[in-house]
Image (cartoon, rainbow, N blue to C red; front, side, top):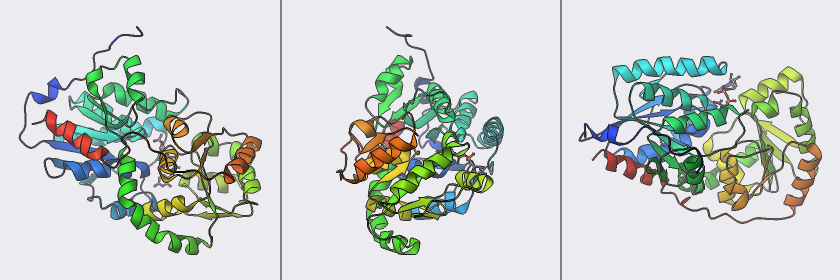
Length: 378
Ligand code: UD1
């Protein structure tokens, strides 16, 4: 019967004081986090006080500030201004700054999304202060321990009192790790809540973005930012493969800062037919993705978003923590071999797909999370 159940932080610890109106710290750090916390903040606002904390892991306006405006998020109450750095340093810097803040302004629980370094740092800080943690987007697993995100996911889940999962299958994986069933809540996907709420607006700006970038109908989209893809020799081969596909469909390539740095450091030439741009903010990117013929990516969230939009997606990685997007969605895991990418890309260009229906990806995940938390504090 596997490893058996490992006792973890339980809800009984939080119901002791039974506050009338709870205070929740919501911690966000990087571009994809903002779309994940927005619906939860929205759903909690009326019945709880929110302390919104930005760690500052992403700090360029195109990676952070414009997202707040477009998503209608409140300004953070505090920005810890941590910025970029090596993993240990970045994690430690978030912990030191967040600990000070949580001691100055105690909260009843801390909510944190995703799998970035700030996610683990926030969960660890709160757990050590005896503050219960709620993990938004719990239970995803790639089984690839060379990914910093996998380490962050597993440890954040271990430290969390509430594990809010996006897919049904996550429960089995978490039970196998020894997590107690009563900590696991299958609620759906808050990133998809944000997508569904903003899709019409995004469609409204698509034409403008296309004309600004000089592309017409029939274009495809490329994003790359994983260190394993962009920090070494592999980047050149991946772009060569995209160059081959660009003979059949022009590509738009919004370049992540990490990737931009590598392109210039290595003197890599962008292939013909590929239009680069600075990172796009949420609405222009969503509008562009919705109309794309094909998306090539190594992002996690884009595998989910393309599935819901019904746009074919090729994921340039050897594994995914989001297998539901391959089983029910439009995603294909193609690895990083250039010949395979070209062959799969050509095959997918000829086969339109339709939007996936994934259980509970219905725009109401934020409400379910708020409901579960508020029940425990009523
Ligand atoms: C981080 C997350 C990754 C997530 C990604 C989304 C970790 C381990 N990784 O990766 O899971 O998918 O965010 O984008 O937490 N930079 C800027 N401006 C910014 C942010 C970063 O120029 O606003 C530069 C930094 O100087 C650094 C590089 O981008 O050189 C990497 O930034 P960092 O936040 O450490 O990691 P990401 O690659 O963005």
